[in-house]
Image (cartoon, rainbow, N blue to C red; front, side, top):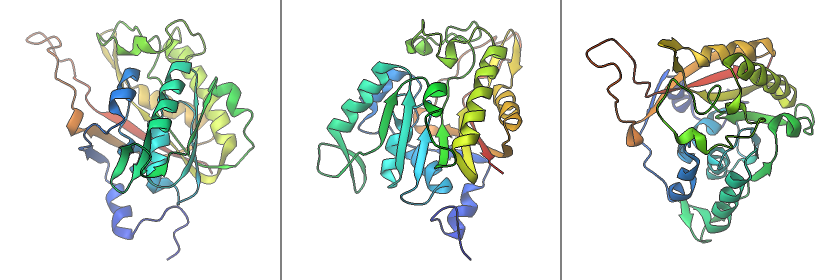
Amino acid sequence: MENPLNDLTGAEWLYWTNSIYPTNFPPDPTHPLRKKHGAIKPPELMAEIISFFTKEGELVLDPFAGVGSTLLGADLVRRKAIGIELNAEWVRIYQEIKATFSVGPEGLVRGKTGRAIESLLLNGDCLEELKKFPAEQVAAIVTDPPYGCSHRVTFTRETNFAMYNPGEAKDFGNAASFATYLEKMAAFGREAYRVLMPRRYLVILIGDRYHNGEYYPLSTKVAEVMQQAGFKWKGMRIWWNQATQRPLRPYAIKRCYVPNITHQNILIFRKG
């Protein structure tokens, strides 16, 4: 049977449809540079996602590229990739990685003994840069956007998100409210729908939140605005990386139930 989507075997395809997605990727050699970002994903994870939704040589886009985990994942599996990132510091770090590392038989290695990292990272606002892309030219969009409004939010004690341009109004993560954030995501969804090839996939990694004493299903809210942009919501995988498991925190212990949200959701959408 012809497989127009990817290069996987039937068994590999079947395994990837499991809704529970635990991984055990230890920090890779680029991690000491990439961890400055504060919200990174293993390149091996991104490579697995890209391998399902593209064939070798096809073009992958990450409009919220950060320090380039998706781009590195694309290089691991011999895909072309373009990223867009607002913060010039994250672009600088990616360029340092690109100049310092290469792709060896077992993954990313320091030095130039392997294949060159070829993926391109543009510095700019994704909503502006996406308008420059021709329609229906991208085989897959795989991205890990900022998670909600105001990186210095009251519903988490984690401070690493403050590393994202805290004064940058164009940063989605600095939206004044969740409503404003979802409006920005809706604008992104419309551009993503335009540049994506027909019947191909948009994949968004996003976590839920706990806000004002109540669980806030951010992933569902984002899925709804992607549907309004024209995408069909095809499913969700629940991902957590055992090698870098977040420590459990004593939220409201002996008083009431407050969840430790240690997973993230991988939302899968298809263009009709």
